[in-house]
Image (tube, rainbow, N blue to C red; front, side, top):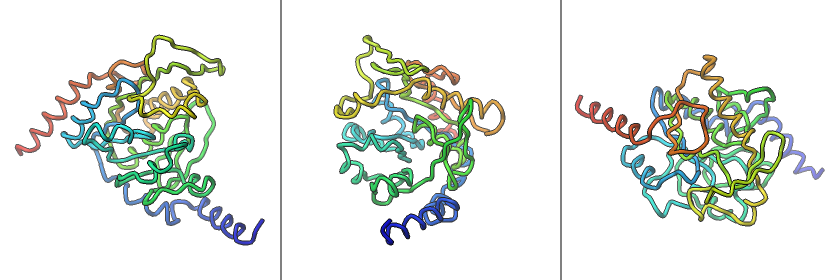
Length: 273
C-alpha cells in the first residue's frame, strides 16, 4: 500500500474504533435530546405521498425526516425535510451533482461514502454504521457512536429521531408495495396492478432502479424490529402509520387528516397560553 494511503487507512481505523470521540461523532452529539418529547413525521417516498400533505407539514412547522431522492419534488412544494438522511450509495448514481448541491441544513450520510466510496457532500454530517445479526435488528441509542444498518434508510432515521428525543413518530408515504420485489426466499414478485413505485416519476433513475429490487421481507423486518424494541420497553417512543393506504401493517394505523387536526389543535392551545 502507498505510504500516504496507509496513513489515511490507519487514521480511519482509529476514528472508527472511537467514533463518538472523533471529529464526525462530536458533530453528531449536538443533536442529543434537541427535540425531547416532541412529535415528528418520518416520510417515505411511496406513491401515496401527497404534495399537499407535505405542504401541510410545512405550514404546521412539525419536524420531519426524509430520504434519498426526495429532492426531486422540491420544485412542487415549499416543504423541506428538517433532517435529510441517505444511506445506499446506489441512489446517487446519475444524480451526483444534485446530491452535492442539496441546499438543506442537516444532511446525514454514512461515513463509508466519504471514506470508501470517495463521495463527499459539502457540510454533511457523517454517521458510522454497524451490522448486528439476529431475529430482529439491533437498535442504537447513541447515534453519535454507531447506527445499526438495515435494508431501509428509515431505520437509521428511527435511531436518529430517538437520539434527538422525539417521543412520537408518524410514518407517511410507506406503501411497502412495489411493481417488482423479492420475497423472503429471494423469489421475484410482480404486481401488475401497481401504477408506480414512488411519489413522482422524477424520482426514478431508469439506469439503476430496474437493477435494485427491494426485498420486502428484509425491509419489513426493520419496521418489525422498531415495534419489537418499543413493545419490549427498550425504547420509550410511539410509532404510528399514517400512510394513506399501502401495505405496512406493523404499527397502529392513524388517519393522517385526523393527525393534522390533532396537531393543529394542540399548537393552537399552546399559543393561547
